[in-house]
Each structure stands twice: as C-alpha cells, then as structure tokens.
Image 1 (cartoon, rainbow, N blue to C red):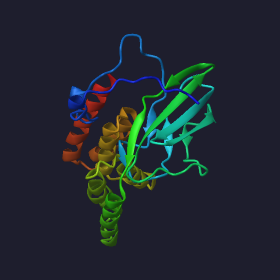
Image 2: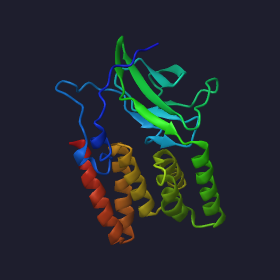
Image 3: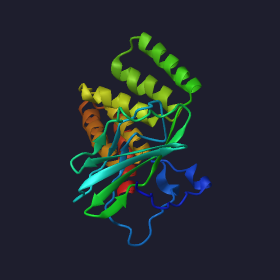
Length: 239
C-alpha cells in the first residue's frame, strides 16, 4: 500500500470564499521548487455527488510507468494500479460501492520509474438518502415536462444539481448534450463555468471558445459578454 504524503489544510475562512469562479481569495499551498509535474484529478467533479460508483479520471504525466488510484474513507480502502496509457478508471465491480452520506478521499499516484508523485487528494461526499430522493423527484418532474433538451439541461437540471453543489452531475448532464452536437452557446458557456468551479481551466477554455464562436454566429451579445468574463478567469488560473 502507498502512504499518502502529508498535506496542509486550507484555512476554513479562506476555503469558504474560494471557488474556481471566484479564485482571487484562494490559498496557494505551493512553495518554491514545487513545480514537478503531478497527476491532476479530473473526475469525479467537485466535492459532492450522487453516484456510488463514480468514474475516476486524471491528467497524464510524462514518462509515468503506471498509476495507482487510492480511494479511502472511514473503515474503507481500496487501490488499483493501471498502466501508463490509462487515465480513466471505471469503478471496479469487485470493490464495495461508496455509501450514501459518507465522505471519501481519492488520490492518484504516478510512478516515474521508482519516483512517486501524488495528486492533490480529492475529498468528495456522497449525498445522503434523503437528499438523493429529493433530487431524483425534482429531476423526474423536469423530465415529465418534455422541455427542449438543451434548455432542460442548462436551465433546470443544472439548477437542481447546483442547489446541492453537485458539480459532477451538472457537468455530466451538460456533457451529454455536447456529445449529441448541441449548437447552443449558453450550454457551452454554463459547462465552461462548471469546469472552472471544478478547477479545470483547460476544459473550461475549450468550452468557452466553442460558446464564443456560437454566440458570434447567432449574434448573441449577452452570451458573448458572459464568455469574455469567463475567459478572463481562465487567464487568472493560467498565470
């Protein structure tokens, strides 16, 4: 088993103000010389989710020989090692699913020929049963309205999921509409906003760029203005 490196805790008063869409007050734990390439967890997104068997993905690390994914919680632990070509792990069928209402820590460790480099741990909670049922009921109501799919995704379902800080479900829902070829600039812009909230500026940039082109094509000045604000935040993240 791998032993996780010690990590500093972000001060509570800072953590409460810190989001990817409002990063100016965020605490930066990096010190001088800490520029080694490390895997970055991509999904699950955010700090809360509905899924008890989430897909786990991360960024590739140059020259990594393999990756070890660790999922741990109270009296809960499993790890899995995958080869260097794999950056997505489907939740293993042989592992016990995450439990409703519990909190877990996910870490990815890259093995660079004997040198181990760890991602920043992702701490994520699975919503308790009461909240799961509430969300499911609201989603069912929206689906029964037979709204245009894009509108349902970025107006209604996104609002329902974000009321419980469910970035994972919001992003996955919006990605589904992108996958079928949506041409709605608002959908791409909202998806980009959510990626920023998940601290994924590269994914946000790609979707802002698509939103920008679609908004120009449709002469949607309101969306163009919102996209420009989002692009400014992406630049902040990339400094």
